[in-house]
Amino acid sequence: MKAYKCITHTLICCALLAAAPASGEETVQIDKNAARIWTSTKGDTIEASFNKVMYGVVTLKKTDGKTVKIKKTALSADDQKLIDQLVNAALASKIDAKKGADQKKAPDSIYALFGKKLKNAKKKDVSVDTLTDKVIGVYFSAHWCPPCRTFTPKLVKFHNALTKENKAFEIVFVSSDRSKDAMYEYMTELKMPWLALPHGDKQKQILSKKYGVRGIPTLVILNSKGDLITVNGRSFVTGSDTAIYDKWAAGKER
Image (cartoon, rainbow, N blue to C red; front, top):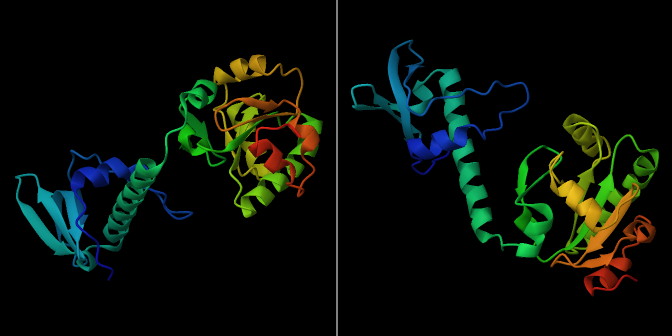
């Protein structure tokens, strides 16, 4: 069995809600202050709260404050699965925290445009700091718009080509879809690899007014400080031809 470092009860419980079980599995949630019934492979039970796991040994804390240690393999299959969920969630939380600590902060001008949080196609929050030092495409679009559905695949191809070339480029989708579900359906259906302003966010109106958006699809290109390069980005995107990026990175429209 793989040996894990000691993971405290507090860290485990804070991270539990972020656990992502395999498809078809049910997520088991534990109140960090509550005990539960743990069952051994022999059918013995104990009421206790989870404390830690280290080197395959699980430490449980009983309601009287005393601790009990038991090998993970001596617990029931359901309890072992729960321990795995707790451990994986805690490790994922630590990795995410490290990434966040290493992420360079975006300029205040970028925060002023997009706020603090964006969304990805999986509905997860993503820090605006991920836009740091990148050319930014602000994409005004919607699923119900036929020209948008025609242009979006070209933009996806363009974005993916730049990613393969390790170019510092990201897109923020500003949705005009009629609902949050429609926005995510659009992102999933067209396989959008980029980020989005949360549906209904007040920044949408601010951005639309700032760049004079009167119709969609519209692609606005900004430099890493949020300064405008062009409001006609759509006309420069042809799919896999990424030569225009170098002009944008230099702050030039063309």
